[in-house]
Length: 261
Image (cartoon, rainbow, N blue to C red; front, side, top):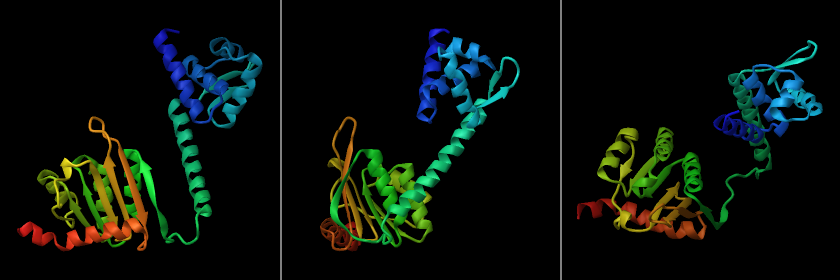
């Protein structure tokens, strides 16, 4: 094998292992894709898998629907197409996710509206965005979102649009005129208001208030490649919610006056 092909072989084997195949099974499936079909001896030669282990690995592949067997003498093994294999992996993945969802749901408290008594921390932009999208997805009446431009991503806009479709009131601040026009096109029902300070001149990331009961606030911690860290709380008596809700509510209630001055 050439060096480039060797690297591709190794990469494919590693990815198949991440999807649940043993190393031997992964090496054999990839080798069979290259050969088209092969006997145990041919597989052993190209993969360096001991011939006595080839049969066990092929049997495991056959059980998962990745290999067909011709009972000639000697036996010949043929891989299913990569499209069939990836479709099979997708089905297994979907089934696993469905089962995990049901299992985790069974572990959660029956009362999912219980108040979060602490202030919680989440780090990493993707993790913060996931938490924001989770809160937006749970919104029933109102979402207030203040953010620097770079954090108002397509995913967030889509989440806000979906909330608006559920008749959730959407209020936004900290965005440019160009982005405001984009928001007006994607979420015609959204209202915008001005912030008390120049949002982009601070290390602030975003402030999110959902149903006036859940609040998240984040900061950006690196100017060159900004990382994001957030704290959040939920419940009308939560200390973070009590303080920031007062700021949010006061600012929203006085938005018109500030804009007219």
